[in-house]
Length: 404
Image (cartoon, rainbow, N blue to C red; front, side, top):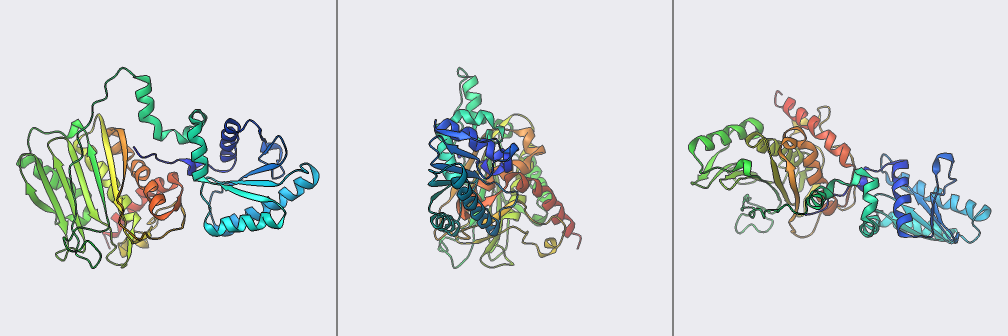
């Protein structure tokens, strides 16, 4: 299972407290500082007095503010070296996000100008240190979500864990000059699966097909023309797309207890772009669709995703919705890498997901799946909580736009 990173939820003193506990566990020579009485730019230091730690977790990450904080940290380190730490030679700049290349260079240059060496310990470095000290997670519930399944297994060591069947295959088609156009397989897409015994059927009957079709048309308002594509005793596919295959969506249901959806990503109104807002709405609506057909028990959820070389946007692709209040994903502070140069599908799994949560908290589960993917493919800095909280308003704005 891919870990859902939660370090981005830390702010201010909460991040400083986390770093204090983590570094104390990792280095017996580290001394944490209580900043409530004024730390004078010193969030921690080594007993030898040769290294100073500064933690920075702003509410809103801006490049100019990061540079200002770096300059301020170096200036305070100079003051402390003159007054309290004559042996100070090293500054460690702690952040819940990884710095950009330009910010790394600025930190090194600023420290070098002050006669010191500086290091940046961001998200990647702190997660590596945290992996050596898993007990630290127990002090900070914000980062416990990825370990729920392992904790259940730990407290029930004797309970057998059945091996679920593999997810079936679902795909979408797209004609495009981009590869792999020879087979019309989509080059930029997402896939979503929900697997649970609550979705199992002895066979796919006509009434099951019609119920699924009606539920799709009701929840995916853009797909009122969706129709049954193929059917047999074990599965049914429903799809909707443009005749020229610039856009295509497909849903599938299997008697083994799997509901799936796949969709192309490219934004038809902005060539070379795709909307993470559209994807967040689709994932949320699909999770609610699954909860409609299976309302109790637990499920496995898988999110597969490949933006290829598309640039990500955070407003809906529907031009009518963009001007509506709330019509944007919040919590995205920066995107350091807008595109990739090759196709590399990546999947993210959530095990033992409560089906009741699919109905009540579908937007939170959607964010838990999408945010790590945005971080991987686009090096995005995202506040998961704000991202999640903005999805219901985004859906409401898109519904309002239908009346225009």
